[in-house]
Structure formats: structure tokens, C-alpha cells
Image (cartoon, rainbow, N blue to C red):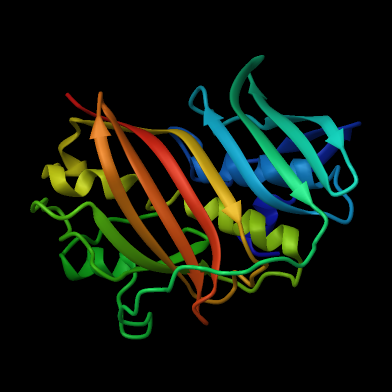
Length: 273
């Protein structure tokens, strides 16, 4: 299995209780997208014949990568068309994260969508590792299971004032099974990777200075269409507002054919000491 599929392969330990593990190499805190994806996977393990159409999550405490995550699912409702699940993620006897997700039986209805912008395609763009090396940074970094190619990257090690918008192409590094749930959970994992950065672009701050404190506070996703996240997707992001030490971010996720497959929002702590 690929690393991403292994991350999503949570372990059942009791009725509606699961255990999630963190890949080796994480030392400070667990990446937020991992907890989102594992919690959504846990909810899916209690669902049959429905697909997630929306999820809303709160990050409560930093996750400890040295121990497993306990995922407890509550079956809130099973209706004729919709089902609702709540998932609480626990470590050291405390909640670190919670998620509410709604699932729907697939059905037909009215359809419309916004148009996808037409940026340069992923072919010919450098990924984040290549951008760092081009800037002279040869320090070893973890290879993420998601490949990201920024359309309009911020210069490495510099912080010019930029508009609070950005677009990236991203996809799973290795092929995923043809399963709606796995692809949604993989997309959820990836959706937290660059969204927070959008709210920092106007403020001329450099990550490496060590004065920046950032953390995702909440995260929401709406799934509009089934998709194959092994293929390239365009993540169009903007930050309409920052205030009170928080940055608000939005994202639209299109597949390579221009279909809007998901939308995201996130508020993040962006504190400069």
C-alpha cells in the first residue's frame, strides 16, 4: 500500500471505535489533514450506501505523533436519504479534534457550478521540493504522500507582499483504489496542506524566522462530485479576511476536466510574536 492508503487504513478495536497511526518521521505534532482524513474514514466505516457531502471539524489540541489516535464514532442519525456521524479523536484521555459529517444516498438534481480558472497546467511547474532546491535549500525534508505544484509560488526564504490568493495543482503521489470514500478521505487529507498559507501572503512574514505561530482552528469541506484523486486537481484559494490573530481561507477544488469536485473553508491562528 502507498503511505496515504496506510494512513487511511485505521484499525477497528471495538464497536464504532478505531485506532489511527501516524507515519514515522513526525516529531512535533500531527499534521491536521491526517486527523481529518482518519476521522472521516472512521465515520465511513459505519456508513453503507451513502457518500459524504459535507464535513465540519474543529482542532482542539495539538496531536502527539508518538502515540496512536483513538477515534470514537457516534451514530447520530440514519434517515431515508441522509445519515449523520460525529467523530471524536482522543489522545492522553483528552479530545484533540472533533468532526461532524453528513452522508447522502446518491441522487440526481439541479446542476450548476462556477468556472475553473485557466492557469498553467501542472506539466512544467516545479513541485515544492524542486522550488526549495532551486533556491539553494538542500536540507532533508519529509516526502509527503501528496504532490503539490504551486502555480504562483512565494519565493523561498523571502516574503514579498502578495495578494491573498494562490493556486496549486495537487494529487496523490501513488494511485488510489477506485473507491469514492478513499478518494474523498485522500482529498480531505490534502485540503489542509496549503490553505492556511493563503492568509499569510499579504503580511510579509517568513516561516523560518521562528516568530510565526500558526495552527488550523477549524476546517470544513463540501464534496460536490466523486473524483479520482490520483489525477491532478487545481486548488484555487483566497483569504477574504484576517483579524484578531486569525486568518480566514476558502478553496475551490477542480478536477483536470474543470469539474468543481469540492469546496473548503478554514480559519487558522496566524500569530506573529
